[in-house]
Image 1 (cartoon, rainbow, N blue to C red):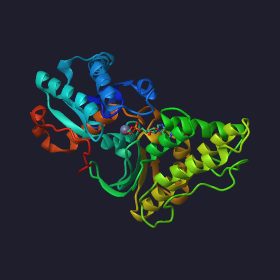
Image 2: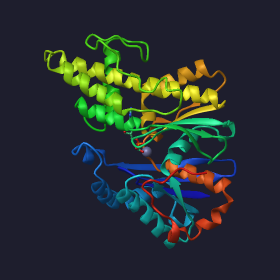
Image 3: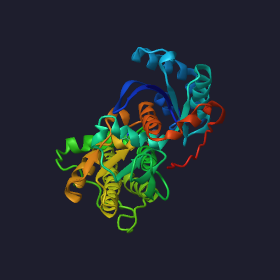
Image 4: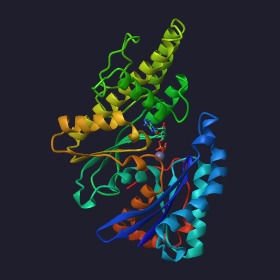
Length: 366
Ligand code: KG4
Ligand code: ZN
């Protein structure tokens, strides 16, 4: 069977083709058209501009995904689309397109939760037969920071989450404070990387600074639960920057920016990883995973691998391939494949073009 999947929840218009087989699946094509340059001018995603671009790009990406897969409309057995959470004007373009195609082609339609997609991106390069439950996934994106426990496929229990800003949001805001540009996560992470290379620091965290005299806080690190808070950490960067920057020479100013970017990243990563390992221990998981846009962060990936090995012997740590860390449609198609395979209610998807709803605050459900 072939699945056509669409994703337009934020600022990427994406389409992909997944081939589903009895014992697995493969990603046949995955096309992403990014609007990053357009939104960079505004320092963040402008929902109506995003919708206008999705409208322009969605059919060309669908056509390209089909062409790359050497398939035509007649070959498609199922359509999958992100129906939330996300920006409503953006989501509606993907959902409307998917509904129209489902009606026209007479194929069933399934709505996929955006975070379910991010989670399933982990399975793209992994032999699914090797997967061991229970598993714990650290979800870190621009809108979410959650620890999700899965005892089986398609079953989600949120065991911890952020009480304020999402991790990606904090990276983006810190980039704005330090004037590092947009998108903020990759910019902060590139600064930190450059700082480590320039200072020949071998260790992935634990850093010596020339200017910063005190470390930034590690919020809620000893709170005893699995929740997070990043808003205070971002404010600490702002205060430190304001307090120190004016007294520095022009030569020292870029160094302060590098040190603050590095220390912020280390603080955020330390809290994320420590809580993931403690939750993994408490729930006796067999697999640890990472998902969402921030999962592209090199320090986070390395530290999670290292600490899983150290703190949870025998537990497998899976990381999504870099090309599937940001928003894409392949992850939506893979989640749809599992829903199709494991959820025998799929008959209800037949007339879903009439019923499928779009929800900006869609909750992840069983
Ligand atoms: O999953 P995603 O592409 O979109 C949402 O679902 O929100 O995540 C986007 C977030 C942004 O906040 C972006 O700055 C962050 O992921 N991000 C990173 C890195 N690459 C993207 N954060 C830290 N380090 C990175 N390398
Ligand atoms: Zn995302």
